[in-house]
Length: 380
Image 1 (cartoon, rainbow, N blue to C red):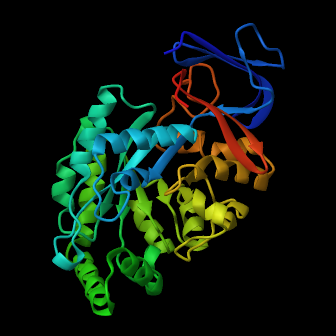
Image 2 (image 1 turned 180 degrees about the horizontal axis):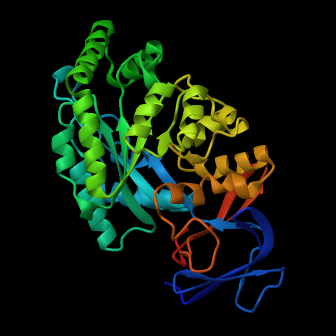
């Protein structure tokens, strides 16, 4: 870690406001915050660029894209993990919860196998070797429509940095895939199924939900407690589903699909997280509620990059512009996600917090990252 760093003459994104000032870093922490345009000797003159806390990403599938850049291509994992880490750093993300699926299907036509335990071990080994630029935690996506969820969860323990467990229920005809035509497009495109194979796939998933769904959900809730992880719901659609989530003690909802679900989440004290690509594109690729609609209704708390890492900063800026409050917009990608998973040592420009920082400016409506620091060490 650098002994000392000063980012001066910057537009600081503080909790609740932006103002011109400087941030001093010492021994990996924020040591001082000062107001004004002065540039002390040895400081970096930011020329009015924004300086805000490093972004906190709770749900990204980006690592899987590096592991399998093309169908049936298994890229060397260490290289893929390092490239994924560098990509996130370059977009301003300094803390990530890498999403990995747990729960597999053994049926030949719909088969997908277990991979999370092995990949997590490789990631944690690289982290221990200090080969990674940013802070990594695990997000286990617990697929209740599967054969092997319980066995795969049992392979993880308290030492594995599992910070988040989400309950994933992809039963056809509900939640994300209420519109079966959207599911048909996705599955046929991914697996090359014909009509008969698609119908057989649908029937098998429904059978798995009927056989294992309630048991798997209960076991995933227990596993999250065993790991000391935050438990999240996924794709809640109705107030009834949200009530079940609240009964499990869930306080974070990933991608609710309707206004009704988002309203119910807030009524139960559950934070609502939506995808940054949804906001940027103006709607959901699955045909569900648009993130901007929830933002306008004051029902959006947290953003996730989901499948486009660079979307996180861009969407935070877009929310700042939509709400007329850049500090509030960027809060959805900094302190709000950090608080939701209990990481109170980061996410804010405050003395004593981790010196995870990004410097950027907005050009032609798009944020351009000009520097990223993780615990005071420049990583991009």
